[in-house]
Length: 175
Length: 169
Image (cartoon, rainbow over all chains, first blue to last red; front, side, top):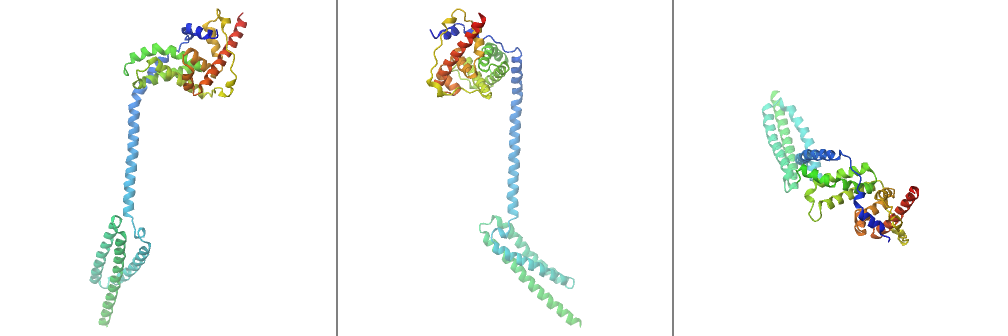
């Protein structure tokens, strides 16, 4: 019969499992088992803390980036044309302020009053700027900011002409 | 049970030898078979919660051992003969000739001389008691391939034994 081999193996199955693993193998397994027991919780904690650290870093980064963006929002982010206008006004304002400062020594009291008015407008400008990021109507706020600059400029022009007149008056009287 | 080292040692004592031989028949390398044995017991002990009582612990462990052994063997790039050659059905082998002189040890030795693919299929079928359907799942080959491989393995085994017989006589 062709299944002699099968029968033979079946009858002598035990004689086929004769090889022995080395005697030290259980010790190795035992060692690994101890190792695993100790290591597993530590590893888990390690991974958890790493994950937490990453989350915290990303969270902080996100918050910081968000704040930076809020703080740094400019008119240009809303409307380029207004931004151009604003830059132009700001430049003129600096120019006029410098001119005004020349007369400061001659008319200290008047200069003090003028700068106080300008400071109020400046404060208003900063308030608008801080409102801009959260505002539901940013174009409106930007318009107000540009208008503020325009008023500052007008004010400076008037102040300059007044100071000029005062100066002329003083000079005439001196003669 | 998970915490009981004594119970684990009992299981080891009970199954280590049989499992070692299962792995050794597949791998033919003592060192690799020991690695498989170590990994399998560690796996079994750490995953004992997954063990459902549907089968015995021994059968469950044997599955782990066989899968790991096959993986080791695959790493060595063993390839099973493709199904293309199935039409050529090998002559069945008669072992009548060996009736009286067949010695388990000789057969065991002869099996180790078989090529990887033959040896694995023959071991799983003949010694571990899997049928061709189960072998096809374990090795991810077709049932037909398993059958042909087994037939060829048997033929090859006979020729190895023949050679030996001639030499021994």
